[in-house]
Amino acid sequence: MSEACCEFHPPTICGPAKCPACGALGKPVKRITLGALLKPEARPHIPNQEEFCFCRTPACDVIYFRPGEILFREEDLAVKVGLKEPADPSAPVCYCFGWTPEKIRAEIQVTGKSTVVEQIKAQVKAGNCYCEITNPQGSCCLGNVTGAVQKAKERR
Ligand SMILES: [Zn+2]
Image (cartoon, rainbow, N blue to C red; front, top):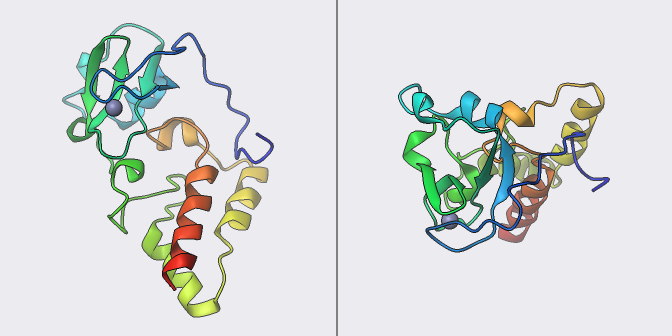
């Protein structure tokens, strides 16, 4: 966890809840993440609770659920969910600083390497990381970014 870009510890009463659609384990996110990223018309439907579960399965269109109940799907979010759109090169992998697979690829094409992870870490140090309200998964993007860099290098 020392790689995490922010000192963010989500609540964990979400526990071992599984996505009602795909059966994968959820990742806990706070209410503020939903409030920040849902479309205005979906926002009034956020249940009165503090913790929600995020489904990470790329092929599943459920974004937020709670045990036994699907709450919000991709269409309810105001942003593209990069994790759910692995084939879309313009779907963000880092929301705080706007990194997408195509931007990462462009840097590698020009310079032969990627500095994105270092750049993000520097920004984190500078206190400019807001994953909680920018990233639909409500937590650090560095794992996703590292994966995207790997993919971009493999494509060369
Ligand atoms: Zn799911």
